[in-house]
Image (cartoon, rainbow, N blue to C red):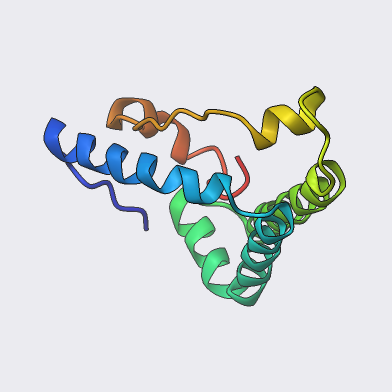
Amino acid sequence: MGVIEEMDQSSVQQAIERAASAAPAWAATAPDERAACLDRAADLLEANLDELLVLCIREAGKTIPDAIAEVREAVDYCRYYASRVRQDFAAPSGCRGRRARATNCHCTVAACSRASARGTSRWRFSWAR
């Protein structure tokens, strides 16, 4: 089952700073390496299917077919986006268009409060959204 860690403002700020400090290294990661991370996530989901099914069933009372569909969808999302990364971002594109925006973006790191997370975890699958 999921765990929510209670954090004070200082702990949240430290977590955000750690995530933000990791962003430049991730931004410098080659698209093929990013795609490989997504493929590895899909492989791990498939390798741990039984354990994940139990979690889906316990978390939201899903039926076995629904739990299988949820994990399969998460795997499909990972593989789809790995494919998109390879197709869309493998070649340099100059400074225009979607490729440039994705490879040169300045992403914001944020925290999710308990109030906003509480209503989503029960009914939305956590791996693919």
